[in-house]
Image (cartoon, rainbow, N blue to C red):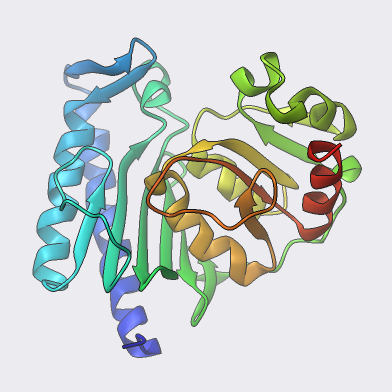
Length: 261
């Protein structure tokens, strides 16, 4: 059954409160020693804070919405193999390398989906204390202030957020895309790259993303007239990894022409 506006606003209020509570905990951790481990390799890190944050979200979500499933990056949620019903998708620290090395430039993200469709998203730029939050039914906000729809700029008129490895290896004509844009920006956090597009600072973002990297963003981007697709313009599979393109409608068309040759 489709969620109503009242239900989504309840989720919004709860998630923003959780993020503010976790932000305080994160700042307190900066005075302590982090436990850092590798996952798939030395550049794929996980810390005790990632794990503690996800456990916090899982406990809060189970109490708030006990019938829902939870998909979390660190595996403390549920085994999820279907988009049926309500699904919460959680990234407890997005940009863990930045978190460890810089104590800055990282995010937290929570997305809520109903039968595969986005109904709510929240991305917190932790160190700047700004939460982008909302969804298709209630609009998109930054700390409660409405976010205007970004100008529909072309690729040549804007900056692109891109993954360095994609450009270096020229995956799917990334070097041509970078050359056609006004320039390239690398933030090291999908959440911050998505915020840059939401805020109209960049016209697009391209990277390999997993469900928790894009779930919240999609719920915020699409209501503002921005497009989220695979690099060749197809719909995303929200339960698998994709080479994802986020962009203004005009920049997406410009990029698809390059990708499709």
